[in-house]
Image (tube, rainbow, N blue to C red; front, side, top):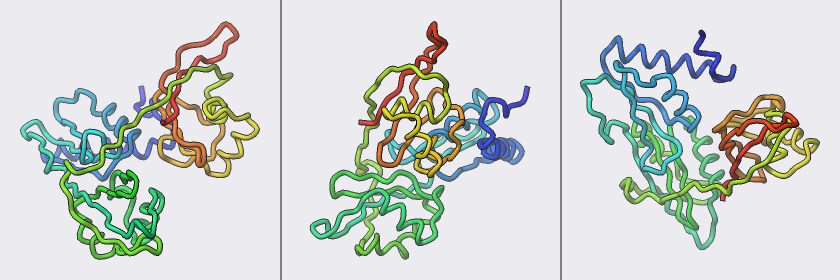
Length: 257
């Protein structure tokens, strides 16, 4: 039985990377620290490593409520500590009376200075308070180069992990039935759209499946998958609860509050 049959084709490359990390830890008998992983990638790592006795796994992204986390793979002789994850946290100071900074603004600013997405974790915003988390190995580069977000001048202030804004992920749960688990069908149900309106959103690149843009309307959504539709918000397929007498799928899903 191939390990790949449990994952979507587009996930096979990441599966190979995880297998390589595992081999590296076993052969070198030394730990491996990854970049920040999104929740789906974290699940894949946990599934592949399972209860492996040769390679242990810890995940940390700066706080107990972090969404994006670094994975620390290590042999049994090591006890993982928070400092092993090499994480730095920042407050972004800016003139909040004259400017507003949104999540996408921070993403764009980091991309513009050449920082890869895997090198920084969550971006946290609460009112005019803005924070983000990054890998220690690029902290110096970010401090030197992230001086503006959009047209707004900013200054970074190093903070402790216990000073991070607490962001809770809560969903308004609903139940429904769908004729299939195709992405366009599930998006239509979750966001109360017609299928004729859901399909173009996907084809135009406005839909993310597990934090990655997809334009494939027919890809099958699985239990635990997270969806994001630009302009409509985030959601999660919480459970697939079997079929009805008319052979429709019963699903339970949640829209982010």
